[in-house]
Amino acid sequence: MTDVTDLLGRAARLLDRLEALLPSAPVAPDWDAHAFRWRRDGRGQGRLHALSHPQRLALKDLLCLDRQKAEILRNSQQFLAGRGANNVLLWGSRGTGKSSLIKAIFNELRHQGLRLIEMDKDELVDLPEVLDLIHGQPERFIIFCDDLSFEANESSYKALKAVLEGSISAAPDNLLIYATSNRRHLLPEFQRENQEARLIDGEIHPGESSEEKISLSDRFGLWVSFHPFTQDQYLTIVHHWLGRLGAEVRAPERVDPAALRWALQRGSRSGRTAWQFARDWAGRGEEAGDGVT
Image (tube, rainbow, N blue to C red; front, side, top):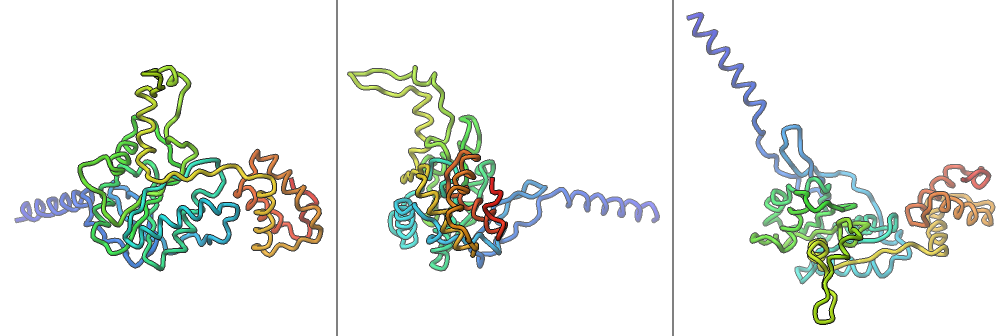
């Protein structure tokens, strides 16, 4: 009897250890949330984590982007209304408001049923799982991929390409993908690829390598470009953020030179640089301008 009891105890402990190694039962997402982040746990099981405090960016705080705001807002409103809308690639110079604009559009439309799912590049291999989760939900979802770029042999590259009109399985009607990138074609481009171009009947045709790289970005129906700000635009954004932060400017004539020195040292007159300068100036208070570098 003792041997049987010992054997049963050992079997129970073994089952407990095996259970710890098995995937846990899937947890239903909190669909009352407006923003989510896709993450995998230590067992490799993915789930949608609700974000209780998404970043509160407003469209009115994004200056000098009227064309870009109008295009993406129109596309998003068409999507919410169930009309034709496209996946969007926002590409261009760093710090010019690409990801901020997506967050601001989400905040503008979240109470009309728009939802945002953030996915990192390496997690795009899980896109089929995410699509299965949101299929049939009444809300409209934008999958947000920030700072996207690939090497051609990456599995996440192939997964994204399949979802963007390249798979036999149709994407849900309540899903769009908004991606930002510094590269228009999302893949590195090399000088040697120009040598693959062919002249046929007087027309230049790109080589296979170039065609492959164009094929991914070409699946985004809407391209929105972002370009470096002019000096006047940069200073306009600086003064906007100083006002929003409630910064006391005792000597306005010192603000512009200090802001330009700040941008020069960082090699960028971007909206991000303007925001960083304004935070620094506001934080210095009365000492601002005496040592801003």
